[in-house]
Image 1 (cartoon, rainbow over the protein chains, first blue to last red):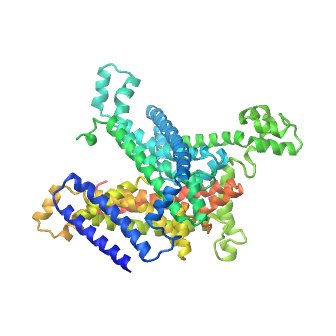
Image 2 (image 1 turned 180 degrees about the horizontal axis):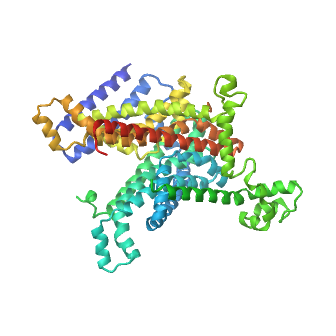
Image 3 (image 1 turned 60 degrees about the vertical axis):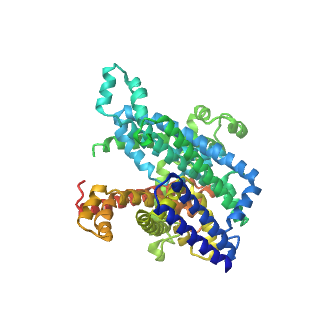
Length: 279
Length: 315
């Protein structure tokens, strides 16, 4: 009971502190400190509640146990990370993005294809494409290739739709200017339209990044070698080692945030001219 | 509707490609079958065939490929085989089957109608919970600075995390606690549809500009009045945009949630098909899932159009 009471006190205290800071003047350190302290509070309350209420380990492990499992299985988790993220997700992501950009340029050039393919691509972007995972596992085997194939299919459509929208995002004035410079189709494409499409493409790439992790992990539920984040989740569930499952989820969360952060940095560097990036 | 022609042409092209691709995809099994039936296959030994690529095999045995589009358990079943499976596992199973609704009075557990229904139930329940909580949290975030500062960054970060990875654990844990599996799946659906709704709704509730908020203030409107008469109506288009994303995510959540506990549903059907090599079954389940997603998104779009028309928003 002591711990439950302590959890409530910590929660109330941190909330009061955050409320005080939030009500004060807006400063940079406040906008970092408040969410951070909220996260820490959640972890502390979680830890205290799990210990105080004696929640069994197989239902919800405490954060400290997850941390212990994370450290203890570091080598194993690194292998899983390489197998799922670096091989499956990243390979599929790169192939899918490049294919989508190439396809978008073709679609943009040929109006008939735009009218025929774009509605289908829009439709496909909303479908539960994860469902192709069993078929891909059957075709490409249990290795990372089948995961990459699932990722390619999941990534292509949102990226395609965004890139096509981006390529259309130049004004008649800008295109006329290129024509007065005597620029041909390819020059206009590389000097004007692709750079103008970059903000849209980064939007698509950010959506695709999360999708690629989802695809790679879920595809492993349908069959995988004995490494991989999805495999580890299933195997540890079978042993009721929930702390390891949570450790895997921590790995997935960290890699998701890292990829997103890297994309944001790349976006800031490549589209420094865009109003949303100026400071 | 001027894009109907090109769309049809593209769909026809995809179907033609599908039929074409089925030949090399199935060639090894087709040749094995032909060999058993007594035909002479070039290269004659199965070991050699295993090591040869698919296209050369097609080139060297053009007269033996008749069975490419009618193989059972094909690596790539032809479109008409998938269509037959769809028909057989929906209408035919229910109307003529021993366990169908006509003879037994309940939906057959082998039909996609039953499995689709299981998935749809979890999707709807999860979507309602997720969207409802999402709207509530969004209102909290818009009206409370503490919640905005502490919760919103996490809501955005959580968008970058493959939440589906949690699905098997949630299912198994809730199942072991004793909750019905419908509810366990709904929790995952809710989780997936929750964050898109929060983010969209916050954007929507903040969409009235300073001028409009000032006008409410000059009318001496109370806080709740400016919420019900300005903020909420202004957020409706944003709400529907995120509801469309949310319901598609809900469906994915329900399907993935059906993988660990084999208690019916399209996800269970797909996993079962992949265990037993029943490829037509996987494809049919996939098409039902696709049709369901399209229908759900269309339904939200229909409600959106009705609502916006009733609100007098020009479209």
